[in-house]
Image 1 (spheres, helix red, strand yellow):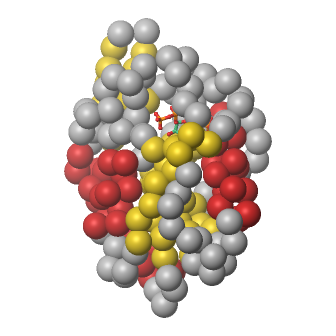
Image 2 (spheres, rainbow, N blue to C red):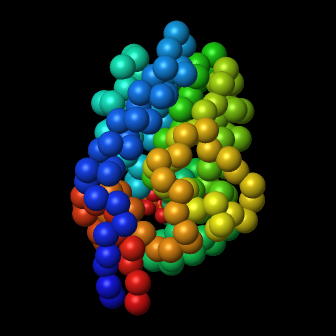
Length: 171
Ligand code: PRP
């Protein structure tokens, strides 16, 4: 398998800092919860909240994984529920990647059902051409082609998450 760099550490740091600044400006004055979608978004989320200049609470949700498959099964279930009360809060769902859109749609609808005043979405990577259901994120780090990417939290069969940069994995 070949691994080639798509986004370097420098590019990632720059972009995440810009996103944090933008999100802070947009959400200032509200009670904000950053909701990290486990596991892939952990790296992006911790960087993002540290680049934000407003108070932000943190919580976590975990949804069903692809397992060892490269493609989604299409069935999304919630494995770990968030603990904080979302009522009246501005919830920023933080994802590492949006592919088919199925995961984000599920999490979005679930958080809305928990009574959030506003639900916003931030994804580090977006693959708009891979959508199976329409989903538009409010904040996108980088838009990419439908290629298989690893690193900065993104895995293949639980491997490669700890690569600091984003790489394309090809056969
Ligand atoms: C990845 C990613 C998103 C989802 C995106 O998670 O973190 O949650 O897939 O794909 P979709 O738009 O097609 O639903 P995964 O299920 O691999 O779990 P992980 O974050 O624990 O690696």
